[in-house]
Image: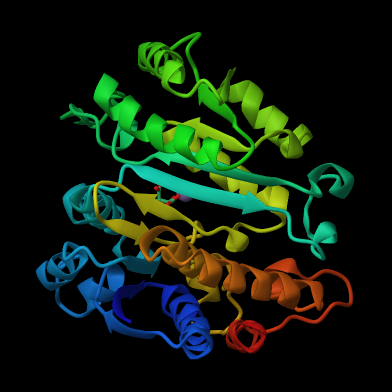
Length: 353
Ligand code: IPM
Ligand code: MN
């Protein structure tokens, strides 16, 4: 069977972690006898440096073909001064919104063998296996009006959600919970925000369609604490865009490093996969990045875009074995442990696929 994957290596460590995922992809193709052609397109600072826009037309056209897209990372301090409409982050938001990917799945698991990497108490984090379902196309990231007052002395953003925006992402979370432990936690700030009051009302009403799923609500401040205190209590966690952004970084720390977290952004048709970490410019070009998030994102491509549960599990099992065998990148070493490079780590995973 022949399939295509669009690769957007992007900036900083993006090209290195995408190359690592590609090494693992080739191993999967050999083992399962697949043919998958990959095409690379410019995105972010890399596109700006090539004299293109931050989300060039040819990249957009490729991303809208209905083929899954794997993004490394975007972000480049050299372009931080640009006005908002030309900023790299704006390009990333344009990518997500053009693809219509409103449900961002961010699984976070505490890998066996990395118990000492978490800054939290390992006996509390061991066994963590949760998925944050982050709404990705609404809230403060996209709400209008927004801006900086003419005198530059005040600024404003708009947090806005419609019922439909809540329903569509909540359905993804309920369906996911059905396939897991049948527990769903919805995180909001309904004691203060009207958007959260609407969120809670809509999610609660929708629960009637999923009588087999037990629904709980928590305020975001309480959940931020509970995620640190008791991460194993949670399974599927549904929340709005900014809360999900913040909580997924915290989940990364719970597991030992943000570099470990993959993500899948799903919508009607299109699917965008990206590790949760950023471009980490200070690590770029040194072969020290952690490719687990990118390789894990490749597993999610198989799971969510290609009905490839078997391949997804093979990749995740190879990651688990590589980690259990004691290999870890620089972000995870402490004391006398030695770090494995990004490219070497990818080869070790590929051997185990
Ligand atoms: C993420 C990132 C992005 C976000 C930034 C780079 C715009 O932090 O994917 O979590 O806030 O969504
Ligand atoms: Mn983030």
